[in-house]
Image (cartoon, rainbow, N blue to C red; front, side, top):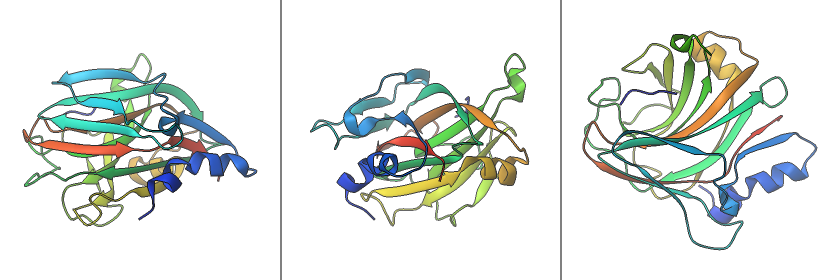
Length: 219
């Protein structure tokens, strides 16, 4: 599918509250713990991946993702000043990984969950670049990276891989500005959008995942 654009859940989903209490700057992008999905738009490529807020009390919810031979994503247009808030923070867990996929090929370009940041090319759409943080179904080493099978302007980075943490919440913090330098060789001062996606259209398999709060921070 062409890209276009171990802690208890209560602790992970309230990471934003902890960050906000400290003297650092926080920009909330996805307040899923509070059941808030506002500002996120769905784009369908092949079939429809389900993105729903889990039932439960506010403050302890998450975004539930289910993909069955489908590829659609959520994206939010938001300009983030990476000079002030370069760190992307999120938590997620997967219900399963995919079997027998080679993620470096078009036939295997499927992921149980991924989150990516986009630098728009504006009218020059072919200059749009994206960095994908993925849960790889292969046993890749952490920070292993490869070029997307469909476009050289997108880099995939394995922040989790394999089935070792299936069913467990995992939290991440990434310096997006530094990662753009490292993986795309570009020093940027902002990004224009954030997207969440699970896609299984190429393999025809199914996957489930949950995503906690997504936010940027200064430290």
